[in-house]
Image 1 (cartoon, one colour):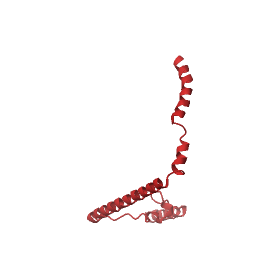
Image 2: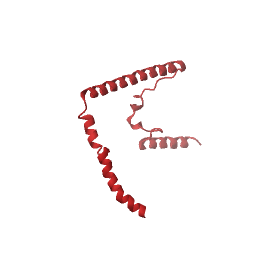
Image 3: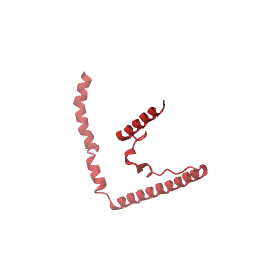
Image 4: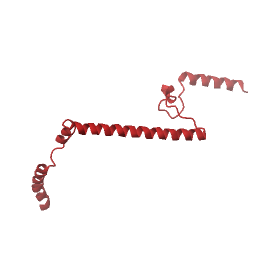
Length: 119
């Protein structure tokens, strides 16, 4: 119990000391990082981002060439992402399309006629 009370008394003073040393508000760093940034640093960051994007684009092109080579070798057809979206009712469905009540009634009627014909 005494340790708890000691931590409570000393803990508050430690919090104030931590702020004075430099572990203060993180909000001020965020504002300076973007708005008050040196133009040269901002330009360097933008160029680095462009280089990174270009690098990833080239890597993806190389991967697609390898994928196409494998497809050609084994006779696999490439999946068309737009072919799946042809029927908007089937979007996100795993099973077959549900029949409408009219279709169910027509099937039931056809089944009854088949039963009536067979002796």
